[in-house]
Length: 304
Image 1 (cartoon, helix red, strand yellow):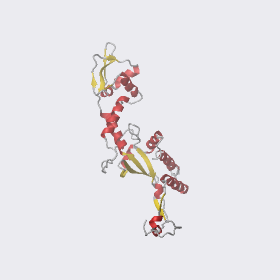
Image 2 (image 1 turned 60 degrees about the horizontal axis):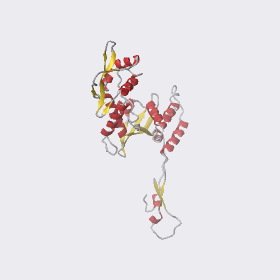
Image 3 (image 1 turned 90 degrees about the horizontal axis):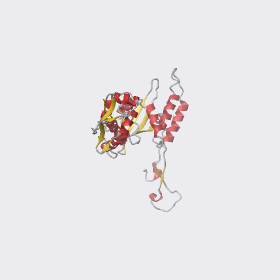
Image 4 (image 1 turned 45 degrees about the horizontal axis):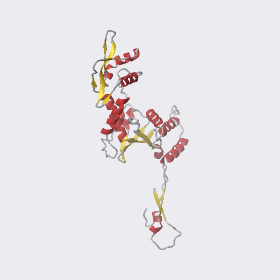
């Protein structure tokens, strides 16, 4: 905000513009928001029987979680991801209202949610990084849909797996095959042998990658798609190159987010946050400023 002030002590007969000084005033939105929230919390008292456990303590906990996911939190991404995943479910993304595009790089959305029994719920602004969000969507699609090519070795190679590892390999043969590793039972003992090994252009996957896949299958439901770190790096690079870039104007239809369909929508495969909380709008909605007038003639020529 820029304000001009005239030099009242000067008596030199020059134009008033020669005595105007620009003053920059900093407006801290976050401090203003916290001030009004604290004032409103001091006024709120539960009046409806049976709803005292909802207000104001529940709302305070929600606000504390959103503070952790605020745009000012640029250091602790893990804390921000945990806060967002606790407050926002996948279905909530479908309820968000797209406000518009900011700086040809971010999408501003409004999220309003009222819990059962509450008159005043959540009303917040979020900012979504359009490149990071689109990149994560493309990355997860590649993770689920890509079938990696394979090549057959000169002769099958016996797999040295533990009993638990063999069981996982047998139960997830289709997952291994989509990763380019094909295994079959051979020999009198019926041990598992590798008959096809994955490759992707100039990248060749080896037994360490196969072992990593077996390790990732532990503690996961049968036939859950997993990818080794080498494959994820390839998918991340492909996803980054094929999606919308910052600086591109989007239509209202293009602004519709894929985030409700993602498994982990909070960061792109390179770790860049996809979403951050901007501000709580309820505190501004409850603020009724007293009317006042400004004498613009004090700034010269009756204008600002």
